[in-house]
Image 1 (cartoon, rainbow, N blue to C red):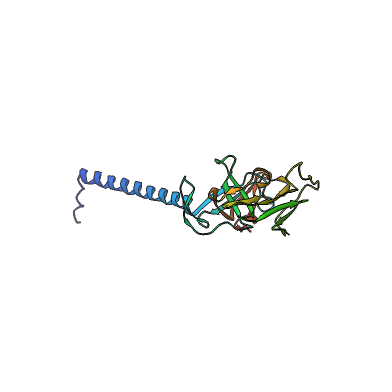
Image 2 (spheres, one colour):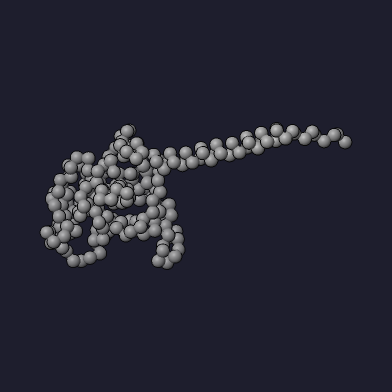
Amino acid sequence: PPPPPPTPPRWYRRRQRQMCIRDSIEAILVAVLLALFIRTFVIQAFKIPSGSMKQTLQIGDHILVNKFIYGVKMPYLQKIIIPLKNPQRGDIVVFKFPVEPEKDFIKRVVGVAGDVIEGRDKQIYVNGSPVSESYAVQTDPHIFPKGIQARDNFGPLTVPDNKLFVMGDNRDQSYDSRFWGYVDLKAVSGKAFMIYWSWDTDNFGVRWSRIAQILK
């Protein structure tokens, strides 16, 4: 039989182990950097903690947000370096809450810069015309008069430049622009476009019918 191959010297085996460790570390670093890049500039996942967007979004829905659709932002500074387009009426957007910027909020865009927004007995008017909103839900038959609370009657309000007027689809249970004002365009993180997972905490089960649902 042929003689066995010579055993590699100890220094060679040590060098091979070092190269293997280095390659593994490089692969991990590349994966981490790629994940950070995607999360910062492309797509980010969010979980819905409240019912302000029912029935469009349920508590326990996990959604994906397109972060580059409105432009590329410089991280942390919230400055748009490559503008693409502005949010449009009807878009579901994630943004930094103006009152507490460390919190992320999700609402639907009702008015953009220059729009005149008014609420009359729960009906929303944009530029003087009533808006048909199939996604809007009203759960409380009581109507608050203007001056008592802004939930059902407010305005007319003109949306300033570089601002958005946003509302939750669950109109009677949403804390939104009716109460705290406008959203700055630079505070918008992106547009929600899909539910990728949904967990029903009340019934302790997966809402299979909601998975992969495209948001409108």
